[in-house]
Image 1 (spheres, rainbow, N blue to C red):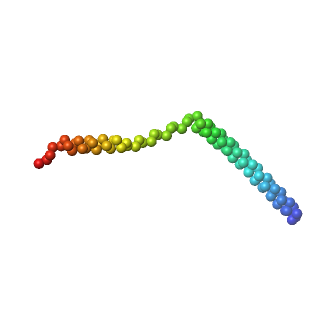
Image 2: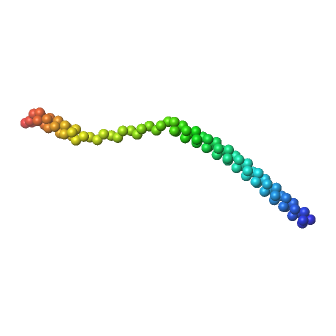
Image 3: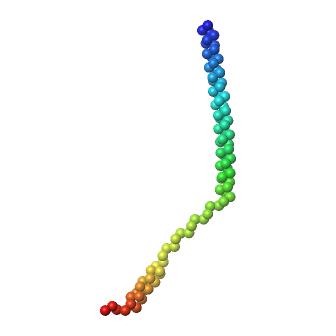
Amino acid sequence: MPLVLGILLVVAAVAVCLWLSITALRQVKQLRAELDETQRQLNELKAAAEVIPAPPPPPLPRSRSSGLDDLREQLRAAHREESPPEE
């Protein structure tokens, strides 16, 4: 009797191992299919990014020239000369 019980236990353990391995293989196949699909989408996005060139960077702001400051100072001086003296 213990021999039969031991054999049944071994058979049950082998069956569980086979079931787990088949389940694992199915999951691996499913993940591989998802990975292939994701890689295909990534390749499409890369191809689209290569087709559309990146826009050029915006131009840098121009710095004020010192001539502009000189002109402002001349304009202020002219306004000071033209204003009538207050009494």
